[in-house]
Length: 310
Image 1 (tube, one colour):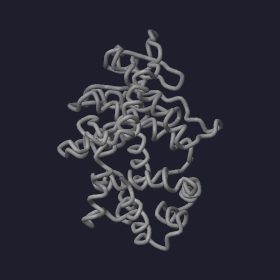
Image 2 (tube, rainbow, N blue to C red; image 1 turned 30 degrees about the horizontal axis):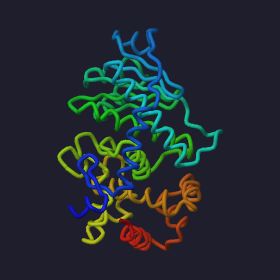
Image 3 (cartoon, rainbow, N blue to C red; image 1 turned 135 degrees about the vertical axis):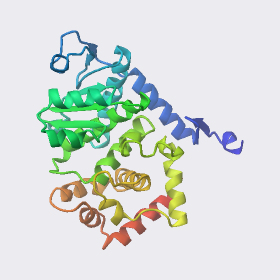
């Protein structure tokens, strides 16, 4: 009641300050009002090769098709366009490095995923076997992503779209040969937080499903402050050395928070950090960009910033 009298209100079940609630509701309205592209009739290459019929839509920057209704594909295009716009504005992307046009294929079941890999990609048997363990398939020449839903709710595809758009846009911007896992997931979660207030797709498939705090990013700032106060937060050394698939829920939230720190409090050092990442380890790049002598000092600097946030 006290929070309500101070102007706080619930958004997706989480109490937020009036300013943050206004921003979240404005973004939800923006996504809903973003153009969803134009329905397409011509049979696509994927339809021909898989012998299926999809809903298809094309917008200025995306071509999406899949085993979902036209309205559902339109909703995914809206998330994609909104995520792209937020990314371009947040990173101040110069026109010459605008994110490339991206195609997306959205399927329902694991068997559909297997058929796509066999019929529509050049992946060999071993590569296809490894890809069956993943919720998506990515190609960069030309840019295309495929995602299968399985037993997850449709809303998960919105998260997957925001993540895919961010990953491809970040790749185009930074031109890193291989983006460090913590940075890739941290940036994806940062965009997902702003556009949707969620980032479930940034966890391994199935991970975080039973964790209340994984369902929405709106609790993460308070959660990070709690971890810092308790001394239970993962170290940056552990986060930055985690291989693909090894980031825990706690590590992913820490990665998101470090990216938030960079994007808000350390903007002046952001591009220096990204430039250093192209030629060395991300940990060393971040320490040098922010003037920290080691990871322990980096953690201390970040923890001080977290403690100041409200």
